[in-house]
Length: 68
Image 1 (cartoon, one colour):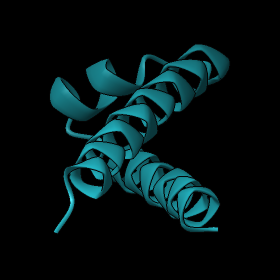
Image 2: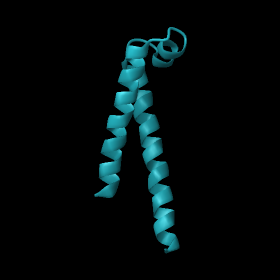
Image 3: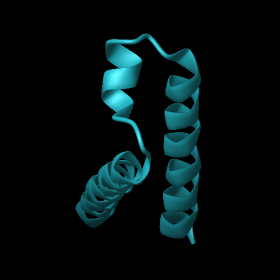
Image 4: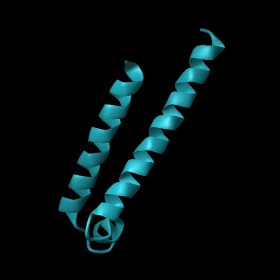
C-alpha cells in the first residue's frame, strides 16, 4: 500500500470530522434549546435521537462526497 493513499484517507477523515463538527455547531445554534443541556441535564431522549439522526445524515452526505 502506498503512503499517499494512507495520507489521503487520514486527511479526508479529518476534514469530514471537522465538517461534521461545524454542522453540529450550526445545528446547536439554530435550535431554540441548548441541545447538550437538554440531553445531559434533562435526559431528553427525543432530542438525543434527533441529534444522532442529524449527525448520521451529515456523515452519510460527507462520506458520499468524499467517495465520489
